[in-house]
Image (cartoon, rainbow, N blue to C red; front, side, top):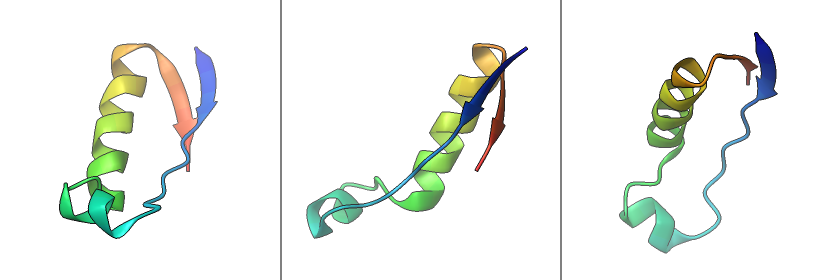
Length: 42
């Protein structure tokens, strides 16, 4: 299994309004990691 580090951040108010929130990013990146056989840490 490949290893990855997941790094999330919101850099602008616009990103937050477009629902690129921290929880949303975590969810999407966890799904990506699982689908691509990555073991991940935050």
